Length: 368
Image 1 (cartoon, rainbow, N blue to C red):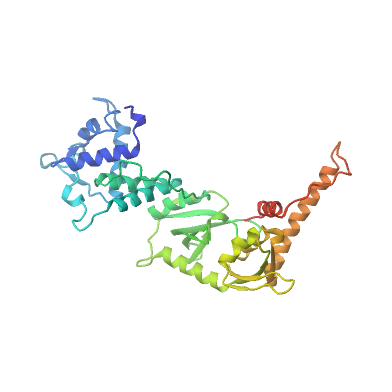
Image 2 (image 1 turned 135 degrees about the vertical axis):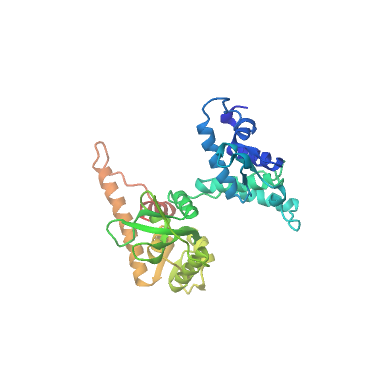
């Protein structure tokens, strides 16, 4: 098998098996010259510096998995790193005797590892599956015809995940509604959480020395990871705290809307309503919803066009109307431009736009 055809997972798996199988440990030269994934690139009496660096990274990776990798120094040659021996004590790596998995549980564990297939989460899922395999827990046959995929659109997700794991301070440009330009924020990232279908970063703002939660979709530029290491707050579950705060804000804000029966908006908003009022004569039924961000809620309501009417609060209604007017003006300008184009017939009316098409166009023009 060609070296470039050997996956990272297979190389790490082979390394773990080799180190578990040896009682007295293996030297670096023995590992590089014999273990699958290394031996294909190993050169006898040649330059193996890049391969040695790969081995150092692999050691860090398997230790991150919780594998108890031991380093044994030779009594006759103390201080010589080339003669260090590496091993994994089998008794320290085995699962506790009281822990076992049923076939159904193994299936779910493997499927869970297959769900994430994007950015840094892809590497985490690979590591989880590798750990299962190296413990002798594996599923040889396909267990399901297809697996779900959880995807993250925000490009900031990957570098933020890495910075959280390494406890490094980051910087990024953040655009807050109401401000003319994005501001550079310097934060200690603590956790990434999903709330109401959107990803948020829980952090400590280094400039203000206060906890802050940022919406990833409002990070409008690259995330820069610094070399500054920070300490996580002791005894604090940052993810749980961030979700609790987001839930608290969500409960504080309500909007009352009237929705067209049988519409897409009805199927979207009615299940989220905390209260509903039956339709009176000639009126539409109304529904009360919670929201955590006024700008995002106005964006969402406006995207459904004539299917939704905001009853209160007035500020929310004004924001939705402003968005719909912007869409109407954009359509009017486009029609005027088309009518003035060479060869255009001024008598040809613009094609009618359906409510659903208007809703999609409104969503496409909304700044999030």
